Amino acid sequence: MKNKMNKTLALLSVLSILTLASATTNAADAVKFAKPGLITTIGQSSDIAVVKALLNSRLKLGLEVKPNAQAADLAGIKTLVVVLGASTKGLGSAGIDLDQEKARAQALIKAAKEQHVQVLGLHVGGETRRGKTTDDLIELTICDMKQVVVVASGNKDKVFNTLAEKCNVPVTEVPNLAAAGEAVKALFAE
Amino acid sequence: MIQASKRSGWVVILAAVVVAGLAAPSFLSMHKPDVLHPGDGVTRQTLLSEYFPAIAGTAGDTPVFILDSKSPGGCMLVLGGTHGDETAGYLAAVTLLENAKVQTGRVILIPRANASGFTHNVAQEAHPQRIVISTPHGARSFTVGARYTNPIHQWPDPQVYTHVASGQSLSGPETRNLNRSYPGRAEGTFTERIAFAITELIRKEKVDLAIDLHEAAPEYPVVNTIVAHERAMDLAAMVNMNLQAMDIAIGMEASPKNFHGLSHREWGDATSVLAILMESTSPGQGRLRGRTDAALITQGKDRFYVLASERHRLSVPYPESGWPLEMRVGRHVAAVNEFAKNLGDFAPDKTITMTGVPEYQAMLAQGVGAFLK
Image 1: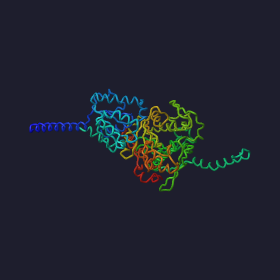
Image 2 (image 1 turned 45 degrees about the vertical axis):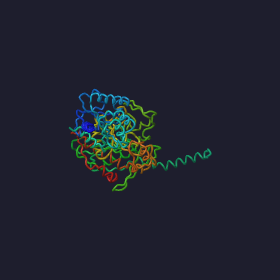
Image 3 (image 1 turned 90 degrees about the vertical axis):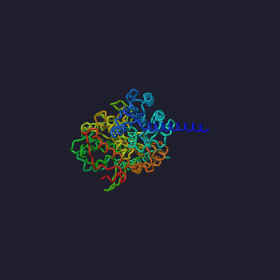
Image 4 (image 1 turned 30 degrees about the horizontal axis):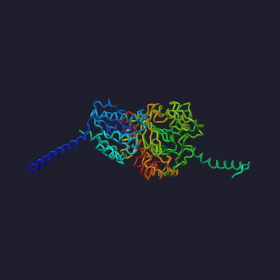
């Protein structure tokens, strides 16, 4: 009886140590993104220009920017930053339609997964950059993201949390654009 | 029921003449331009026809105000009143005219870009002819005009309006829309010649940055937004970021390459200028509005828009407090100021420095009138 109890205690101890180690490792993985990074858009909204101004001009993160990024552009990239938001004007300006943009997004995210490129999702356009098209694009891609940062006014209905919970993607909600920049900068911190 | 007879015919004709006689002074009063008070920053006043003499003496000619620091720097053009019923654009340009002083570079202001549009209202819109704003110097009246040039200056409308430079077809009345007429044509319609004159001004003054101020309906997808030509996108993004830091929620859109005639497309394609168009939101522009009067334009409150907002039918939030004129004008003025401030970061020899421009929070607190002479 005593032997059996000792064995059980030993097994529980080993399991506890392994769980703790796993949690620590997961916590470390969830907050780290590496450079070089590439910023692209999913939906072709001009929010990518704002993100470029924020992350590169203001915060000096030095990330590459390609609104129409393709799988081949991931060569040498460690982090793909996707700026979520659909715009008919943006799609028109890019000369593509929504179906083509969805296909590009799916191919890009798939390639990122295959090449072990981590994907960071950003939604900075607020309430006005939501709608069925944007929501469809979010749902299409969110499960392949490692982390999502969203400005609060674009998440009043908590759609990011609802969708992300299904696949355990952490969502960081921030009050405004400046805070989104700081959150991303912290994610890239050495 | 009136029996048809010579007598009843003359009665109807007489009644029509009386009604026309009573209405005529009201209609004609809109042909008298508002009194503006250029501030000390204005160094020269001219007319648009200086840049294209063919419009001299026509209803398309309009005052142009130049604020020249005499110190080398960039040149910024600001247009208000492209659409006469988009009051915040007009009044933002007037606010700059009456307050701004330029220390570096030059600023050129055209408060009533489509002067003809201010001589009438669009039929069946029930827009008031004018609004009155209280200022420290007394009440001032500002015209609420029309989206299009007056049909008495350009008639008739074709069934289909073809933008000659691109071949694009639009509905006939768009032939009188200044913001579908760029870059304009020297031998074109009345409206196209106004557009040509403005494009010539951009070329001859070597304008570096040109901003066209507008308003749009709360249900319109492009509202509370900066629309930028691709060359202006980086500057616009920086301004967008700065405005958001001032708690001014504002979007960004790229100028579509295949939608022709608009300032943000054609100015940028026809010249080397950085072309920007800005929209604020006004219930006076929308289809869901209730009573249309001067209070709607100035206070921006509308219970139907509040209902629509609660049902997520709009592109912008619409609170009970509405979108008052000071908020709409304030956004435009703050944005123009940020564009001027940041231009030099993208082109160091194109710095523009302005002072005297009312701060956004000050305008919200004190109203537009506090900053008018």
